[in-house]
Length: 248
Length: 312
Ligand SMILES: Cc1cc2nc3c(=O)[nH]c(=O)nc-3n(C[C@H](O)[C@H](O)[C@H](O)COP(=O)(O)OP(=O)(O)OC[C@H]3O[C@@H](n4cnc5c(N)ncnc54)[C@H](O)[C@@H]3O)c2cc1C
Image (cartoon, rainbow over all chains, first blue to last red):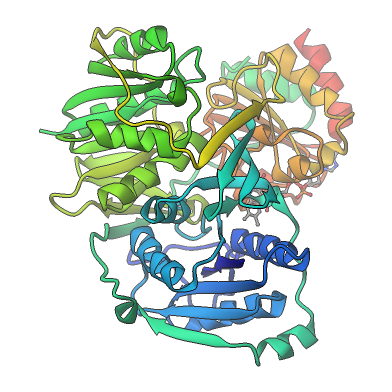
């Protein structure tokens, strides 16, 4: 079985993102870029499945400009066998990403597709579910445990009410949550090795996907600021203050 | 005029408050508002939905295989009744996030995630980058609006309405490829985080599952729900459903009290809509104090017993 893992290049989670003064976007100049943290977890899971003998090959896929090859190389350094860049100069919205991934699925015929449950830049939380719908296959979102049993999988999902367990037939799309695993650190020799691993580049046009139905993104604004708070000295003052504000 | 269909969320017993919040968002869009309820034995839930202010009609689809919220099953039913609706709305809860993109893909549209405000029937505000930027998004003319509603941004609609209820049977059979096994909830009798007026939260600073007792004790004294940071959940002090933040729950209590939480952006994004934020942390440099309305530097294990005594 092959496992396909989606990788998105995003602003690193430690960066405090700022909106540009003219409202045209956020400041990404000289900002550190990384693999979306959820995608790292997805890849780690794929590697563990392969290394346990339950898959033959792990392929990382990213849609974006050539700069996303950097994140694909990180994926290769973590241990993926090969990479595919879906080349596009336009930032893709989830529906186009899902359509493009579906084309890659048709070429590669994976038994399992692992994605992050959301990307920490646009926080959309859509691509995996869209892909499953278009592929007409099961989805299991926000997975915190994944167990393969031959042609099916048991997935524990983190939901608002607790932990939900479902069983899905393979092939399927699973999107992963934070507690599924802890991704490995990349070591220097692995980075060297990754340079020799194959990276295919295929354009959106070659895949036959046209960008359609994009939402129009207008003005960017900083979030409303909360008013400056106060400091109190002890528990008694805190209770006093809460009473004054009608909160107790 | 807009024709809006809201997908109801419930636990088989009663309607989740997120549905009443979606109704308020729908009121802001304006137009005819219907609600779809899927499940088995759902008469009382359907009646609850019909009582929400300005709801015209509830379509209750009753079938055994719809009792668990398997997205593939529910999406099939939504598409079977979606004709003629300009807007399909669901809550931005784990249920809505699982379901709505599946519907959007089958309808061939991009989804608007986490509506926090309505500019016009097809133009909305939503947060990105963990709430560090708010963008305007416009749905292209002629496309169905499929969206999730950021429930911390909306008040629940009143229950003064009187819509009709129409019961239907399912249009599709259960999908075979996905089977529901069960749900494990760690939570007890405390108020639900997403509707609680007061929330007491603990972070890594609480130190252990055992120590979390002090947080529960204060919460019970205040009639509060209990939340936690990711670090506290990861360390196994508390179950996952208590996580507050970018990837946990986005909440909007009147009062939020954070004990031993440092205030990482991913946590803070979950509490920005709280009325008053109180932070207790032993490190005066902790970033949580930047957003706290009331801050207190000190050891939580000393301060909580003092607070409890003062509250007696
Ligand atoms: C993709 C991604 C998503 C994330 N999503 C979330 C999310 O949804 N929610 C979330 O919370 N985090 C999330 N995080 C994690 C986040 O970045 C922080 O790591 C986490 O919030 C830290 O938790 P904490 O404040 O409890 O722990 P710490 O940062 O370790 O802070 C502990 C605090 O306790 C204080 N303390 C210690 N002992 C005491 C004492 N006795 N009395 C008083 N104070 C004390 C310390 O001074 C310190 O400030 C996410 C991270 C990533 C990468």
